[in-house]
Image (cartoon, rainbow, N blue to C red; front, side, top):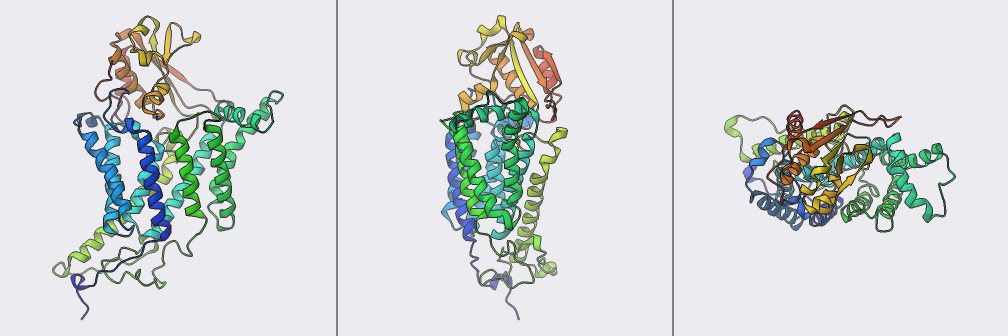
Length: 466
């Protein structure tokens, strides 16, 4: 007579060494990036906070601090215990939960690196090691592919692509002064084209190592362009590029013979999954579900196995959606960063203007980001993206609803009259001509009306310190 689930010996499932070290690296870089952008993750009044759902504005002031402590503590738990242990998996799931709550309080926190780490943590916490690594590899490839596609347009080639070239070419003794416009665009197009080759090359075993070396060279080049020797971007950008170098070496240099064990193939000792206590079956590979037994014979082990299977399938669904969601970005159904539009300039833009007669009402720390544009007179543009970088060391979330919320908080902090605020909404740039359609909304009442038209919340949480 076979032993009942409660009588079966507790099995120790050995974790994949790649996953074990990758988890530690993810936790280490996450802690560094949270430390670099720590103001963003606290309840601060120096820059507007815009909750993702409207009810997020009702979260008590102390709640952000409590959840942040839980998030950092969960990272500590995840790396303090063996990757295969329940405590480590629980730590990663707690990290995902805390991250979601913090984003609910302020959608500005949905930075692309935090989004990536959240998806990786979900795989670490719910999937067997080999299946989790498969999903992480797929996620990395999708980041490269969609990031490259988002920059394959005239808008990138004429703006940010040219700035990259202006930093790079003089260092290697070249000048663009005599180049034609077509040559300049073609040279700028090499950046996304190379990134696309890296992403596709990582998909096949024959080209994987070449693509890995190319990815390391690409990130080293970006560190040079974006670092102190070039555009002097914030340390968080450099940290994330450095993370990709380490991550890619671990994920793509040495591959397992089988990413997910086949149910028909024998598993190594300690991974056979003979009892309900083993979590190492991969649902993607058709592993059999626990046998259906009468309710009276179901023990806690069988129910626990079913719960793990359900949680794993939910994770597969979430990760599948994350991988294909960027396809919806051209129709405005996916935010630019969620679609991995990294350094892309084709997306929707929002410009905030204050009437020149009201500029003195702005607090000094905000007024220093006001720039007069002759074509916009008598309105003065407030560069809210620079305000975000100066205050939080983090780039502004590039979504019109968030930027509208920032404008409303700005008007409240400066006590602007109804006719002293204007917002210009600029639609996505045409891929071939970079032309945009734009519309102006003038007056506080009209801006609030525009904010209510978004699907997600566009109203600020709390007040900005005057």
